Image (cartoon, rainbow, N blue to C red):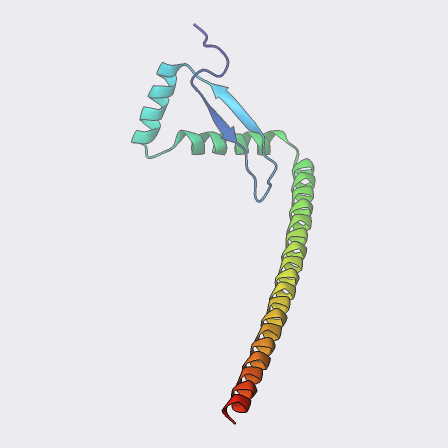
Length: 132
């Protein structure tokens, strides 16, 4: 008897290198077969997820021509480099903003200190006059 779509399923995410765009593949397997497979894989010190990922990688490499794989990897590398560059630029911008905020805070602190010093000098001079 076939189970409804998604019953007793797990997700397999194919990941090649640093590619961030992932596609989830759902595989359905009868519960008894899944349990038996999991049992024997565990006995062999293996994991069903890793085995499926390995099999999918092998299928990809056997099916997709090398030139197509190279182009896909080139595109992925280009996207990754662009994303890293954007991240560096954002970090630099954030550091610059933080430095500007710190500088402004330092200026405000200096002005506040100057006001306190001026008030202290004023009250000191006022005390000298009253004592005289």
